[in-house]
Length: 255
Image (tube, rainbow, N blue to C red; front, side, top):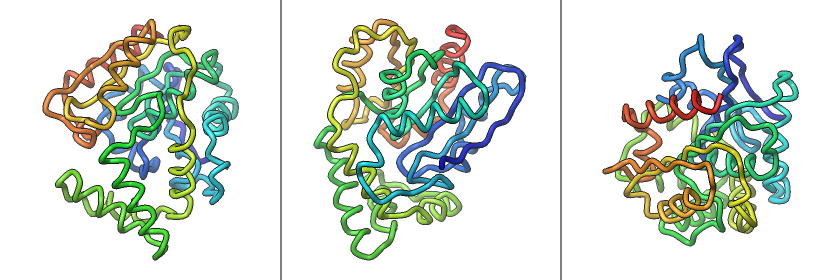
């Protein structure tokens, strides 16, 4: 079972997905969500499988990308929505690439932040996640990963957000991460895609910048926005008017 919340209304539907630790509550606090006018867009907030109030299987096979995409499409089916915009950051951005590959007929557009559609890079951030999840599995705690993120980006997460992240299931996250590291490229040929895409990425995102640039070149209807002076974390917490304006233009242009 997957958990979602539907704001309703007659506007164009936009399904939002968050990062590796995010729940619907985190999504509601995001600047992109707050920038979507309620009279113009019907916003749907969704928890990934393994996170928030969705089911949390401990088997890596349960996190295969086609299954994760099926969750997103099941939300549309439940709500009677034929086609929607999908917007995701980080872990949610990776899912949006999966939706573009496996269910393009259900997509109006994709807004993808801080990820790429190729094999998962062996990068500094990936090593932090792998090591912290292994440490967390030993003690059945999310603390090593949350603390690892804080140390990596030199930040201290707000107490309320940190508490939500610590409430996640470390075994489920370990399974999800193992599946992602092994899944390889999302698509064999991005050049055949006809889905409109906005890909945004921090200029200091050493993990995903090269892949995001490559994807924007290969996807025919993709646009790339590089956020200067932002790393992976800052790009997703950004209140940058340039980003918010670009998101709104992308959604309106492809509606």
